[in-house]
Image (cartoon, rainbow, N blue to C red; front, side):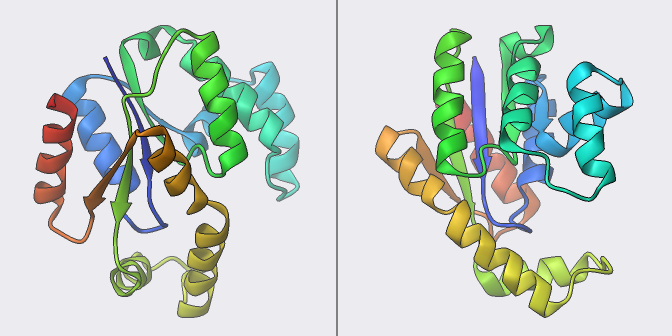
Length: 184
């Protein structure tokens, strides 16, 4: 049973690697953005609540995200494993997730941190060609990541779940290493 949390700065390749590995293992790749879009599209009670925040351009509050995660991990396809991407984003969410997994009688196999140097992240993010991606915004996003999300690395290091992977290599090299980690 594989249950993984993917950590890493914006541009580290979490989404891409999570998709590849999830397909390889036939388990769901669960991204918070996707859960949100899906709940809104399906007009679930939580989706309807979330839509009002999204429509106003506000961040969806933690409690709502936590409820969506709880709902998603309880679904049928998630019983044989999952890969979480983009959640948890801070230590409080990680603590909530830990409690939730105990309630659901599930456990996390590993928290995988894709480590990539800032210069590579900058190059990758500028290369995506998004309108809002310029050096200043990217530098700011990386700084916000360091302040809010980087403490998760210590959190998972202390729980013994952390596995660090060099994300500054080819797609294939990273994928191969991730498959090796999952096998062991």
